[in-house]
Image (cartoon, rainbow, N blue to C red; front, side, top):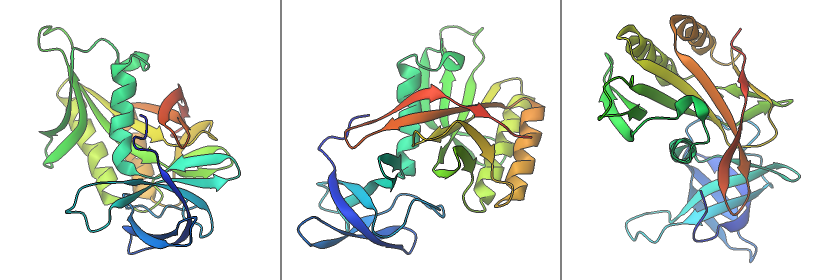
Length: 238
Protein backbone atom coordinates (compact mmCIF):
# COMPACT_ATOMS: atom_id res chain seq x y z
CA UNK A 1 0.00 0.00 0.00
CA UNK A 2 1.60 3.22 -1.19
CA UNK A 3 0.89 6.52 0.54
CA UNK A 4 -0.42 8.86 -2.13
CA UNK A 5 -0.10 11.80 -1.74
CA UNK A 6 3.13 11.62 0.28
CA UNK A 7 2.93 11.81 4.06
CA UNK A 8 3.63 14.96 6.07
CA UNK A 9 6.33 14.73 8.75
CA UNK A 10 6.08 16.27 12.20
CA UNK A 11 6.85 15.83 15.90
CA UNK A 12 4.29 14.38 18.28
CA UNK A 13 3.37 16.75 21.10
CA UNK A 14 0.63 14.69 22.74
CA UNK A 15 -2.10 12.16 22.14
CA UNK A 16 -5.35 12.78 23.99
CA UNK A 17 -9.07 11.94 24.04
CA UNK A 18 -8.12 8.66 22.30
CA UNK A 19 -8.76 10.01 18.81
CA UNK A 20 -6.71 13.22 18.75
CA UNK A 21 -3.02 14.09 18.54
CA UNK A 22 -1.24 17.45 18.47
CA UNK A 23 1.68 17.50 16.05
CA UNK A 24 4.23 20.21 15.37
CA UNK A 25 5.18 20.57 11.71
CA UNK A 26 8.75 21.44 10.61
CA UNK A 27 7.80 25.12 10.18
CA UNK A 28 6.59 25.37 13.76
CA UNK A 29 2.84 25.18 13.09
CA UNK A 30 0.90 22.95 15.48
CA UNK A 31 -2.01 20.98 14.04
CA UNK A 32 -4.46 18.45 15.47
CA UNK A 33 -4.65 15.10 13.68
CA UNK A 34 -7.20 12.32 13.89
CA UNK A 35 -5.88 9.13 15.54
CA UNK A 36 -7.50 5.99 14.12
CA UNK A 37 -6.49 3.75 17.01
CA UNK A 38 -8.59 3.01 20.09
CA UNK A 39 -5.86 1.10 21.96
CA UNK A 40 -3.44 2.24 24.62
CA UNK A 41 -0.69 2.58 21.97
CA UNK A 42 1.95 1.69 24.58
CA UNK A 43 5.39 2.52 23.18
CA UNK A 44 3.85 4.22 20.14
CA UNK A 45 2.76 7.58 21.51
CA UNK A 46 5.81 9.12 23.19
CA UNK A 47 5.95 12.92 22.84
CA UNK A 48 8.89 14.19 20.81
CA UNK A 49 8.97 11.25 18.42
CA UNK A 50 8.85 11.79 14.67
CA UNK A 51 5.45 11.04 13.17
CA UNK A 52 3.94 11.10 9.69
CA UNK A 53 0.45 12.18 8.72
CA UNK A 54 -1.78 11.73 5.70
CA UNK A 55 -4.10 14.51 4.58
CA UNK A 56 -7.66 14.28 3.28
CA UNK A 57 -9.23 16.81 0.91
CA UNK A 58 -12.71 16.01 2.22
CA UNK A 59 -14.15 19.43 3.22
CA UNK A 60 -16.51 17.78 5.73
CA UNK A 61 -13.67 16.53 7.94
CA UNK A 62 -13.02 18.57 11.06
CA UNK A 63 -9.41 17.32 11.18
CA UNK A 64 -7.99 16.85 7.66
CA UNK A 65 -4.86 15.04 8.86
CA UNK A 66 -4.67 11.42 10.04
CA UNK A 67 -1.77 10.08 12.07
CA UNK A 68 -0.25 7.12 10.18
CA UNK A 69 3.30 6.36 11.40
CA UNK A 70 5.63 6.92 14.34
CA UNK A 71 9.35 6.31 14.71
CA UNK A 72 9.29 4.07 17.80
CA UNK A 73 13.08 4.05 17.97
CA UNK A 74 15.85 5.17 15.65
CA UNK A 75 15.17 3.78 12.20
CA UNK A 76 12.13 1.70 13.22
CA UNK A 77 8.72 2.87 12.04
CA UNK A 78 5.35 1.55 13.22
CA UNK A 79 1.98 1.98 11.55
CA UNK A 80 -0.63 2.97 14.12
CA UNK A 81 -3.69 3.41 11.88
CA UNK A 82 -5.85 0.37 12.65
CA UNK A 83 -8.05 1.17 9.67
CA UNK A 84 -5.22 0.12 7.33
CA UNK A 85 -4.79 -3.42 8.67
CA UNK A 86 -7.72 -4.94 6.75
CA UNK A 87 -6.48 -3.30 3.57
CA UNK A 88 -2.94 -4.62 4.07
CA UNK A 89 -4.12 -8.18 4.68
CA UNK A 90 -6.50 -8.07 1.72
CA UNK A 91 -3.74 -6.76 -0.53
CA UNK A 92 -1.40 -9.58 0.57
CA UNK A 93 -4.08 -12.22 -0.10
CA UNK A 94 -4.97 -10.79 -3.50
CA UNK A 95 -1.29 -10.78 -4.48
CA UNK A 96 -0.92 -14.43 -3.48
CA UNK A 97 1.58 -13.79 -0.70
CA UNK A 98 -0.30 -15.78 1.98
CA UNK A 99 -0.23 -19.47 0.93
CA UNK A 100 -2.72 -20.54 3.61
CA UNK A 101 -5.34 -18.22 2.10
CA UNK A 102 -4.74 -18.85 -1.59
CA UNK A 103 -7.17 -20.36 -4.08
CA UNK A 104 -10.34 -18.41 -3.34
CA UNK A 105 -12.27 -16.73 -6.12
CA UNK A 106 -13.75 -13.84 -4.16
CA UNK A 107 -12.96 -11.58 -1.20
CA UNK A 108 -15.67 -9.57 0.56
CA UNK A 109 -15.37 -7.11 3.44
CA UNK A 110 -17.59 -6.31 6.43
CA UNK A 111 -20.06 -9.15 5.88
CA UNK A 112 -22.60 -9.69 8.66
CA UNK A 113 -22.33 -13.04 10.45
CA UNK A 114 -22.40 -14.80 13.78
CA UNK A 115 -24.57 -15.18 16.83
CA UNK A 116 -23.53 -11.83 18.33
CA UNK A 117 -24.36 -9.66 15.29
CA UNK A 118 -20.79 -9.03 14.13
CA UNK A 119 -19.22 -8.07 10.82
CA UNK A 120 -16.34 -10.21 9.57
CA UNK A 121 -13.34 -8.25 8.31
CA UNK A 122 -12.74 -10.49 5.28
CA UNK A 123 -14.76 -13.38 3.86
CA UNK A 124 -13.11 -15.61 1.26
CA UNK A 125 -15.19 -17.93 -0.90
CA UNK A 126 -15.53 -19.30 -4.42
CA UNK A 127 -19.14 -18.99 -5.65
CA UNK A 128 -18.39 -21.08 -8.75
CA UNK A 129 -16.83 -23.93 -6.78
CA UNK A 130 -19.09 -25.27 -4.06
CA UNK A 131 -16.31 -27.64 -2.91
CA UNK A 132 -14.28 -24.69 -1.56
CA UNK A 133 -14.99 -24.10 2.12
CA UNK A 134 -15.58 -20.36 2.87
CA UNK A 135 -13.03 -18.76 5.17
CA UNK A 136 -13.90 -16.07 7.75
CA UNK A 137 -10.96 -13.81 8.69
CA UNK A 138 -10.83 -11.46 11.67
CA UNK A 139 -7.90 -9.03 11.39
CA UNK A 140 -6.20 -7.50 14.44
CA UNK A 141 -3.70 -4.66 14.20
CA UNK A 142 -0.72 -5.13 16.54
CA UNK A 143 1.70 -2.39 17.64
CA UNK A 144 2.71 -3.42 21.18
CA UNK A 145 6.20 -5.00 21.10
CA UNK A 146 8.49 -6.14 23.95
CA UNK A 147 11.98 -7.38 23.02
CA UNK A 148 10.90 -8.51 19.57
CA UNK A 149 7.66 -10.13 20.76
CA UNK A 150 4.43 -8.55 19.49
CA UNK A 151 1.55 -8.78 21.94
CA UNK A 152 -2.18 -8.30 21.58
CA UNK A 153 -4.26 -6.56 22.85
CA UNK A 154 -2.59 -3.48 24.32
CA UNK A 155 -5.72 -2.69 26.38
CA UNK A 156 -8.63 -4.72 27.72
CA UNK A 157 -10.89 -5.48 24.74
CA UNK A 158 -14.29 -7.05 25.29
CA UNK A 159 -14.90 -6.72 21.55
CA UNK A 160 -11.78 -8.74 20.65
CA UNK A 161 -12.90 -11.65 22.85
CA UNK A 162 -16.35 -11.45 21.28
CA UNK A 163 -14.79 -11.84 17.84
CA UNK A 164 -13.02 -15.02 18.94
CA UNK A 165 -16.31 -16.47 20.15
CA UNK A 166 -17.86 -15.64 16.79
CA UNK A 167 -15.00 -17.41 14.99
CA UNK A 168 -15.59 -20.50 17.12
CA UNK A 169 -19.23 -20.44 16.05
CA UNK A 170 -18.04 -20.40 12.42
CA UNK A 171 -15.93 -23.52 13.02
CA UNK A 172 -18.95 -25.15 14.65
CA UNK A 173 -20.83 -24.88 11.35
CA UNK A 174 -18.02 -26.61 9.44
CA UNK A 175 -16.43 -23.50 7.88
CA UNK A 176 -12.90 -22.08 8.20
CA UNK A 177 -12.14 -19.31 10.68
CA UNK A 178 -8.87 -17.36 10.96
CA UNK A 179 -7.57 -14.78 13.41
CA UNK A 180 -4.95 -12.75 11.51
CA UNK A 181 -2.51 -10.58 13.48
CA UNK A 182 -1.26 -7.72 11.28
CA UNK A 183 1.93 -6.33 12.84
CA UNK A 184 2.65 -2.91 11.33
CA UNK A 185 6.33 -2.84 12.29
CA UNK A 186 9.35 -4.91 11.35
CA UNK A 187 11.24 -5.47 14.63
CA UNK A 188 9.27 -8.60 15.58
CA UNK A 189 9.85 -12.36 15.49
CA UNK A 190 6.67 -13.75 17.07
CA UNK A 191 3.22 -12.88 18.41
CA UNK A 192 1.74 -13.76 21.81
CA UNK A 193 -1.45 -12.85 23.67
CA UNK A 194 -0.97 -10.10 26.28
CA UNK A 195 -2.27 -12.13 29.22
CA UNK A 196 -1.06 -9.55 31.72
CA UNK A 197 -3.19 -6.87 30.05
CA UNK A 198 -6.31 -8.84 29.11
CA UNK A 199 -6.29 -12.35 30.62
CA UNK A 200 -9.77 -13.09 29.25
CA UNK A 201 -8.56 -12.53 25.69
CA UNK A 202 -5.60 -14.86 26.19
CA UNK A 203 -7.85 -17.52 27.67
CA UNK A 204 -10.38 -17.16 24.86
CA UNK A 205 -7.65 -17.26 22.19
CA UNK A 206 -6.33 -20.55 23.54
CA UNK A 207 -9.86 -21.93 23.64
CA UNK A 208 -10.44 -20.81 20.04
CA UNK A 209 -7.23 -22.42 18.78
CA UNK A 210 -8.12 -25.68 20.54
CA UNK A 211 -11.56 -25.48 18.93
CA UNK A 212 -10.08 -25.19 15.42
CA UNK A 213 -9.70 -21.46 14.76
CA UNK A 214 -6.51 -20.89 12.76
CA UNK A 215 -3.92 -18.27 13.79
CA UNK A 216 -1.86 -16.35 11.26
CA UNK A 217 0.50 -13.42 11.84
CA UNK A 218 2.56 -11.33 9.46
CA UNK A 219 4.97 -8.48 10.00
CA UNK A 220 5.16 -5.48 7.69
CA UNK A 221 7.88 -3.53 5.99
CA UNK A 222 7.03 0.05 7.00
CA UNK A 223 8.43 3.15 5.33
CA UNK A 224 7.22 6.70 4.81
CA UNK A 225 6.43 5.71 1.22
CA UNK A 226 4.51 2.46 1.75
CA UNK A 227 3.50 -0.39 4.05
CA UNK A 228 3.53 -4.00 2.86
CA UNK A 229 3.15 -7.30 4.70
CA UNK A 230 6.45 -9.07 4.18
CA UNK A 231 6.87 -12.29 6.18
CA UNK A 232 4.95 -14.67 8.43
CA UNK A 233 5.47 -14.82 12.20
CA UNK A 234 4.96 -17.66 14.62
CA UNK A 235 2.04 -17.32 17.04
CA UNK A 236 2.67 -18.70 20.54
CA UNK A 237 -0.58 -19.01 22.47
CA UNK A 238 0.54 -21.25 25.35
